[in-house]
Image (cartoon, rainbow, N blue to C red; front, side, top):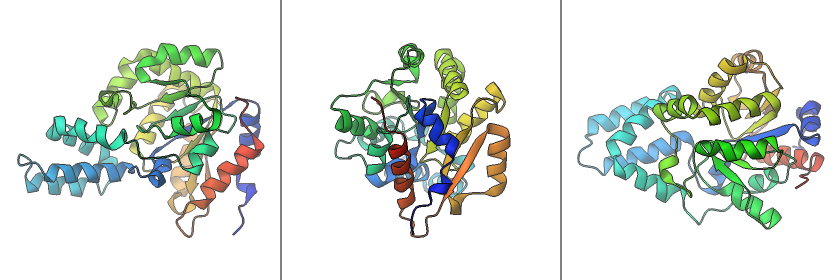
Length: 288
């Protein structure tokens, strides 16, 4: 089946051609490179908990039952973090600072789109690797507690990558995973909060690799709605049509100004994501 270019909004292309676009990368984009989804990570942490004598079977069974509901992911993550103790940090460091993982074609396409900045909630360094491969130099990148440096680049319209939930290769202790982590970052890191507000009220964001069940994504847009009440530029969420809920899509549009772009994925190979990104990259090549 040929890729249908008509699913790509002309306004999205115009925004990126004119430097008004930015890309938000979620966990789904790193799965093909060997990293877990949100639910996958929790399952891995639950498996780690099975190895510990102080965590009984009843507790583990509760975790398994709870993660059947994605709205409970953050609560489970919080409890696992507490129960695992230092084992949690050891596992996260080993899992996400792995050096044998390489970028996919999708990562390579993203860094070659004319995006004024990239935002990612992923802990890995696949975007940085893809950028280095494309341009022969390491990209400027900042995490949430480096808002002053990030804001300086943003105001001067200099490209950078914002690691919104921390960076495993920099410091595993910076990783944001739980409800408490989100609250602390959004409400105590005032510079980061101002930067996020500025980005989402001045840039048109293309969300790739996130889903309607992604707790990180929903946590963020709920917060942003309180800040700008769905105003500002139109944003776009690229989504497998089988995961697209028309009722939620309508709420995203009316409440958050996010237009859902559905693509066909009958073979579950997500080939159309690559074709979509390839079309956008050809139409809006980077000017770096």
